[in-house]
Length: 374
Length: 85
Image 1: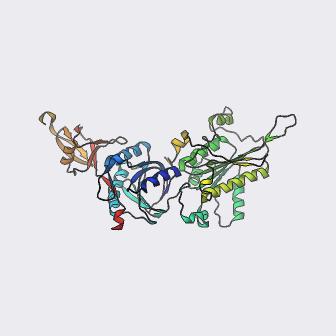
Image 2: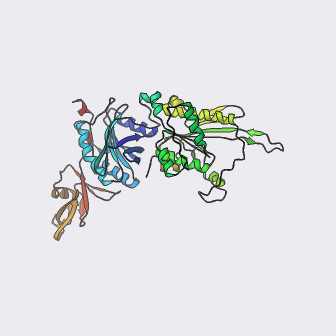
Image 3: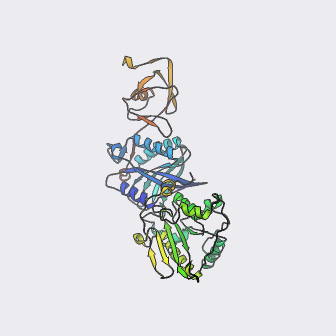
């Protein structure tokens, strides 16, 4: 039997939850991209469409709506190659489909999944900390969601276990680094914890194997020199709704006759599924990518030029902040106090500052977010 | 109604919910299509065009094309109240 998870960015989840938990019974469509890997489906929330008041019908109990809304959602799903997830809410920890729910589910889901057969569609009842439902594909039931935790980096109400060691033990952290850095990372992790399961992929990103492994991660850490690799990883993380921690530090020298240390800017940039990406934050842009290519065509890069010195103690400060940010992303220990874009470290003054930016939604954020494997 | 009905030489066939349904006339309204296909009146009629499936109100008149594909949908509903009965 196929298993299914939901991965929803915080902004969509907040809108969804606000709508479906209001006093008047309400429902809506979460249009989703997806990850499909054998018998596992991950539905990636991309758009939230509440049932509009003009489609509501008079009903003796619960909520009823005109099928024009269902067909409008089908049209959008067919055009955008997305799956339809019909969502509503029952209070309680372990919700089940009611008879009315089952009647709609057994009529609507085979229909949607026959009309848009090349992707899964789902009927989900959300409880306070779990979801129940069914997943269909090509007219057939392929999975039942029973007491399935709604997963994602941005759910505001995590299952309690996630805040403790059980949740952290189950977390998957991807580290993408240069020139064999992954082997060193793996060695260090193994020396710290025998319980940690470490997989080293000697693959270039974005090879098929690397993509397949990274899309399952709960958070990805980028320890890279190239802007092109950062840009690729930025898109990838938006596409699969995975938080990205990108770090870097440089020692900039003055242009005096005897060069002196001019500045030591360090950066721990955080990209959340519902926040500004590296392009929105100004870390990556087309001009930098073009400069890095040095006139060469896309994909024709030589080894990175590393003229600047690296000082391990300074790197260590940045890495420690990044690791703490990984823990924050996984556990949410800072709640709403965590800055949305990470931290800046000044290696000269030793000052660490928060980075907060407005989410303006660049083309990567709008086009790539939540599309998954499509 | 007589001036709004065009009679065909032989029955024209369209598909409603993937089932062939013959029509003696090409100009009909959505309610007539549902009635001829034995569809409940509270269901709604759509012309199948992937990505642009088109709804028709019951009173809306259509000019049938041979082998056109229609589908119908009932209203949808959800309820948490059933849980507590």
